[in-house]
Amino acid sequence: MLLAVAGALAVAGLAVPAARPAFAASLTEVTAFGSNPGGMRMHVYVPDVRPASPPIVVAMHGCGGSGPGFYSGSEFASLADRYGFIVIYPSAMQEAGFGRCFDTWSTAAKTRDGGSDPVSIASMVSYAGRQYGGDLNRVYATGSSSGGMMTQHLLALYPDLFKAGAAFMGVPFDCFAGAADYPPGTSRCTGGAMNRTPQQWGDAVRRVVPGYSGPRPRVQLWHGTADTLVPYQLLQESIEQWTNVFGLSQTPTSSDTPQPGWNRRRYADATGAVQVEAYSVQGAGHTLPSSGMAAAAIAFFGITAEPSVPPSSSPPVTGACRVTDTVNAWNNGLTSTITIVNSGAGSIDGWSLVFTLPAGQTITSGWSATYSAPSGQVTARNAAYNAVIAPNGSVSIGFQATHTGNAAKPTSFTLNGAACAVS
Image 1: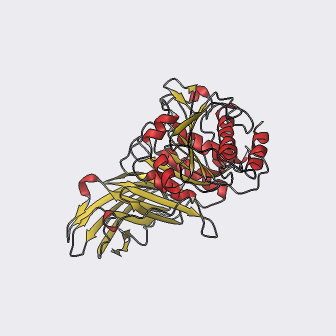
Image 2: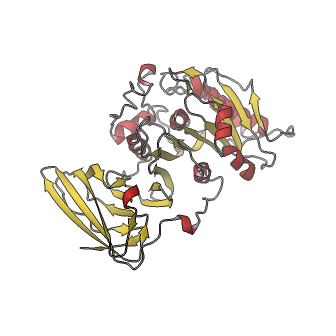
Image 3: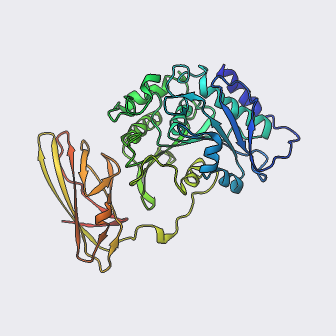
């Protein structure tokens, strides 16, 4: 059935109504949008000022929420007013024991043309193309928690429809084994022990549309480091899935901190195009998106330019620093104690230390800092109690790691973007 929907979408993309009705800039419910096996409700926000073929963004709430609630509690509608895109707000109707959630667990929902919520959402997109002249070549998905899970779900099911997605606090596609595996506390997926190989995660996506060779949707991932409801470690599982789908290395091509507390890893292809990017939001629990994150998502989609960051909000660049790294290794494990010395004249207030672990090393635990990646390029960011390093002062941090025979130290360190002397 969804193959038919996809065909209708392609046709609808070429047939913009000659005369559109006037729309008030308010949230509107649509009751007859097409095939709706999930029994979902559809609300849509169409800004007064928009281009002839505006982009379409599907914005999805978390468990227990609703489309109107996500409209009121997120920044996507105000961004739509500013940049002229349509926002679809689906409301999930599937009861999951703790409120209504988007179905990302059933066999029907994990099968293209299978039914349930994904079919309903595809119908909503088709309707937006027909009724409002939405550009079906610029369709994007985003959502929080259950909506973040559905975001990754839709990117796997409809790589020919969605061009990109931004998932907040989600899980990889095919993480849930079934309805009994969904509720937190009893779920293998969100129970804190989920660990598959990148190949296994990638194969789960490739099986959905066998033989598909077209472009894949670009993926943006967000997760709070203090999230325990949907554990933070699932961010790494999602990274592994999508980098594998794109055939990319597990090592990021770049890493930075575009906003204080937002540690970003980017994974670019051979042309330099970023296909996957992941944000570790320091100290955040199950509370995303917070202010400014919707704008970053819209920028990732390409609807707007990347939002500028006031220079004063970025961690200061240190002029001089020195790092000492002491490693104690055994069999296939090691500990590393890193001392950061501020050898400059000014105080450092807020810091991030970036270094690259030798191949085969993986951090399993750490102290006195938060670590944004377990292997490859690592960003260690200050804890609340050691953010300030006075002139000639120092801070010591450390971690424990496994290794496969190479227990060497990183060869270079940068503190707030500036190279440090290594002793």
